[in-house]
Length: 386
Image: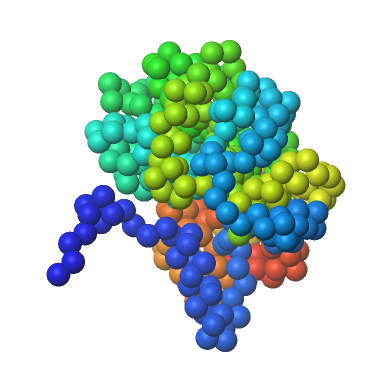
């Protein structure tokens, strides 16, 4: 009989991927499922990016690249990080890889068995499993509705102990679309700096912002030396299937993280990297139009949810999710199963994102306006029966 590693047995399959698989399976059987569950922009990749990839293929750009990525793309990322984020990055600080993989590499390179990593609760579903796969212990930091879905400096301070090695931050956040203010981010960075804890800043939703400003902790004085900044093309440029992103890290951290890249995927896809250059250097109009449409959809989903007495929601300031609290007699997993079965609408249970997410559901408005109106209406009809 096959024997399995304890680190894999100790984690659950990704609930968001499972929902995506269930939707695909149901649709494959001829069932029409209205999906408000997937964190994927429903816009095409901008054509100038696609054309850059086509040209790279025509030019035979199909071989290995340097492990950290092609120089041209790393220069573009470093320039973007300096100008837009205030991060003193150089090309030698940049590693190009799928965004999810940059996080995994960082955890593998910086965490030992017994170490602790502080993660927001609720927070993205893969933070805790990745920490566990690295042999370390995830420590949830409450960032619930009462906290505006932002971890407080006091909560982080209270959770830090002798084994704390890492603090994971995510703004704008998944699942609630919260945006950390400059003062909140500075206070969190100060706690990490004071305890010599590495900050991992997940900034994948950076450009999908409606109110407030995006603040990178690596931009604060003294913080670049202990921050790994993770970002990518998936959400900003509607390039989810391209599997392309990056991390920026100070040289001592970079030198260890890049070894994980060398011994896993070697390098990111060559022609996709050329497309990444085109994305960063190209016109911003497609992005601006996408964000304006997301803003309109956000307002629409909030208006539709306001019609449901059992739903209460904190308006998101970024990303493309709402995270309403639902007054129900069943837990969020059971509720989402009922919604899927009875209303043929897929949404994500709040418990998938941590203990503080229970009682909520995540609704993605990366869907057409018609789908949003119809989907929320169906959800409301299910809630009327509870």
